[in-house]
Image 1 (cartoon, rainbow, N blue to C red):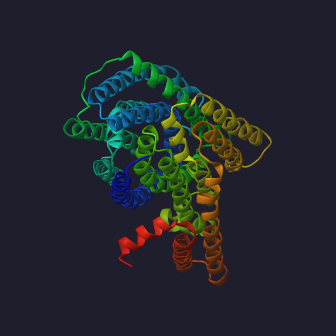
Image 2 (tube, rainbow, N blue to C red):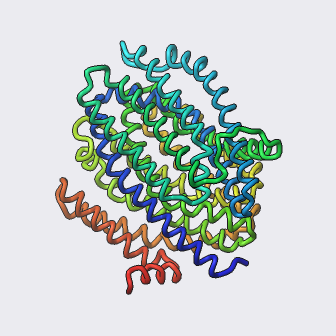
Image 3 (cartoon, rainbow, N blue to C red):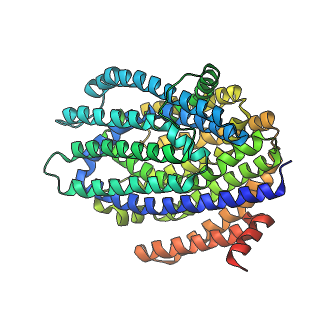
Length: 508
């Protein structure tokens, strides 16, 4: 059992890290919202759709980045918990070697199969295929650079250096804002300039990560090695966790390509807008989960299972409440919000995409902390095989619906239904592997968020019915639902310990 003082220190560290990540999140959201409007107005709906189509195809390979980032972070967190600096260095050097090896393979695949797909298969407007080919090269290079940054990001997160993580993210956001303004005054093809400058940003961020790690993360070096034991374990871990990420990428970016082939680039613009909103919500959730996840891994690895269970429940509850804050205004006022944000450039139908995308985010992120719990255990093979098999139904079911003539947004309904089933399966499999009691999920998550859901929707509906459409209704609905959610969260959603923490910070 862990020392209570240590748990208190860990809780304070989580709180500090969360504040730093919220700072990052707030600035990135403000920058991202403004940048998205400028980029859409500068490129236009058609060229923005071309960018979304090409970028989503390259993004299908980010499953490699995500799976290896998860593996490196897990092994780094375990070794940091043990305090073995030599093992930390071997993990980092092996991760570097794996990333260079994987980058070479994916670069070869991108330059062969990738260029063939863009040149011959992708549904693109007349006269823009040549531009799309160059844009693909920029996107591919950006992806490779981000892949080589994985060990450095993992080192920063595992050491819980969230202040640095936050500042590097803000710098990246500021560069993207500068790019947006550059597009407005560009004398050359705006789509090509956008791809080129986004590639430059990837190099800048890579350099900042490496520079910080060289000074503050003692395990990080440019040395490349292939420690046989770690190479085998990390590849195995990344392979099984990567299986679920492969399925997820097919379900998201693969469906984006399917929409491109069936409906065209305008619908890719709609999907891109909805995914931009979803990405903002994910930033909120990740701001909490990134601070929690290293502690879940370290506490479970050290044998303090009850504390790990408690953190996993908190992560699930916080994820739901954060996303729900966004869902209520968009459920009632998506059309007006998108018009105020993007102006008349947003294609008709974007509101429906956005509402459903937020619900999908809720279903996807609800059990993220519990996935971290089973990753900490390390016994993940059967878990990922079962979950991936179930979630793999999304792409073929969507394909069938499109063949039957259903609208483009029907893919979201499939996603919601399948991931609801996945979450139930996850809960019981995690219980079998880690010993987590499912009843604890009901008492600490479900029963705490249900009253919040009722009060939040009730407040939003009351304002929506009593006021005329327009800016002031959006404002009043957002404000009233936020107040209702926050108050009901305090009353029903927080444990006594969490209430005491809030009171101490507010000096009540």
